[in-house]
Length: 337
Ligand SMILES: C[S@@+](CC[C@H](N)C(=O)[O-])C[C@H]1O[C@@H](n2cnc3c(N)ncnc32)[C@H](O)[C@@H]1O
Image 1: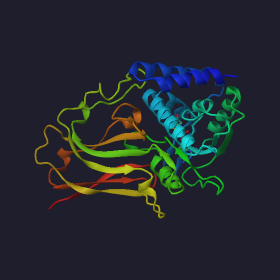
Image 2: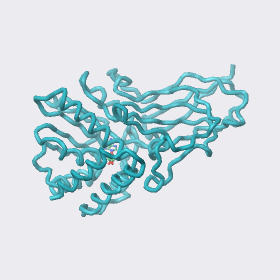
Image 3: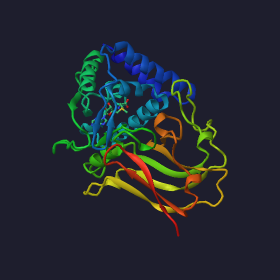
Image 4: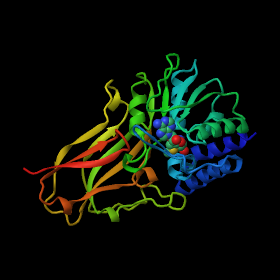
């Protein structure tokens, strides 16, 4: 039984508040999973779904090593669960974790901090090996007494039963600039099922248009050795913030008719852009409350270059289009007035 060891690790994650502490606490969690896991994960079981590609079980396991991501999500989810337990003191809190991966990294470590009657969790993954792995971990860690239901299902189409009103939905199924993975399609499906008080994590994914020098912007290449908070990262000084394109949150998808494409307004192209020649998408994540992942703090908040302004010189305005009907991708439309 590893419950006590995991409790100490998650407490150190929640207490951490410097880059060194984040890195040390995340490493302990990663080492813990690697020590107790006995399943060999494959990198050949990626799955294409309607809104993107679900990572292989190996790729999903490796997410634990995106250190700031792991620490900040666990901190944010802990805050959300604590708030819900406070708001609803007389009943258990229904949690849907969509895309739990083989370690259920963002939920299993937190369970020992709550009384087993307080949390009622449904954990979904499209990958059967991930579900088998989480089942094994639940037993090994000693969490069998908790109300945990494990489901092999597609979170883009999953409908929760009527007797399971979701208090907290968690999904981290995204890559940088929302490319490749199906985060937005999953959020669209789950947001429509949340009651008014239901919390979605991440609470907001902010997608911004910037003109900048892409190669000069911070870009996380090794999340284990480059653990730096945004206060110490050096953004390119001549970048130009153009506008917030979209905010992916519960409200965006509260409508009943699903969409598969998001289109921005048209933005005037700059006449002089030698200092900021690239059209880029920046993503920041508000996980919950004051817990945020800023640019390049995680692989999933790395910036993305859509096109060079040098190739648009005969045009006057640009619109960005995010299409998540299949593997999510960015494109653009141009206007010449
Ligand atoms: C980026 S990994 C994250 C794993 C884990 N939640 C973590 O934070 O470390 C995303 C996981 O979501 C799963 N996934 C992706 N799309 C899915 C879908 N449509 N339905 C269910 N699971 C999905 C993948 O199989 C993968 O295990």
